[in-house]
Picture 1 (tube, rainbow, N blue to C red):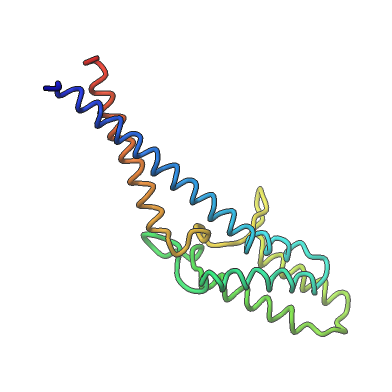
Picture 2: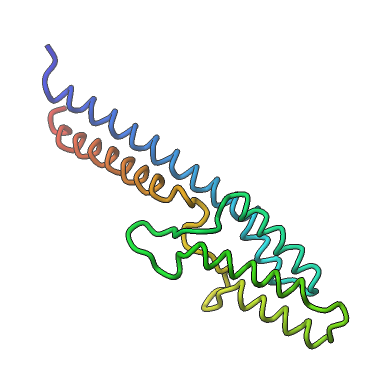
Length: 175
């Protein structure tokens, strides 16, 4: 018959490794979703903001909106516990659509000043400026609408790894 400490130590190792596997899978999926977001949307929005001409800005904004609509990022909130304005996906989407409409209705014979003002307005809409410049997006939109699943998976993996490490720590003196 095995001593109780040996079984607890084995259980500790199993829980620790299972927690690590869950956390690595969670992290890998987060990275995948972030890269996918950057390719389909975030990078396109940044290029639209950086565009030097209205047609280029319109092309990039249209591509970003196509990616957003393909992922159904048109309504809802990315927040888990309470709804804050910065996590309103619907507002973000409607604002981007309004910017596209404004760009597409700009007259072909608009003055250089009008085109320049339109591009500056688009840049202010698409980018947040502070200490750094970043694309304006709701926090957590890359994993939306699976924000709860990602939260629970991260907590579950951390809990497993923590319990496993605790069991190993409690049984280390027995060997």
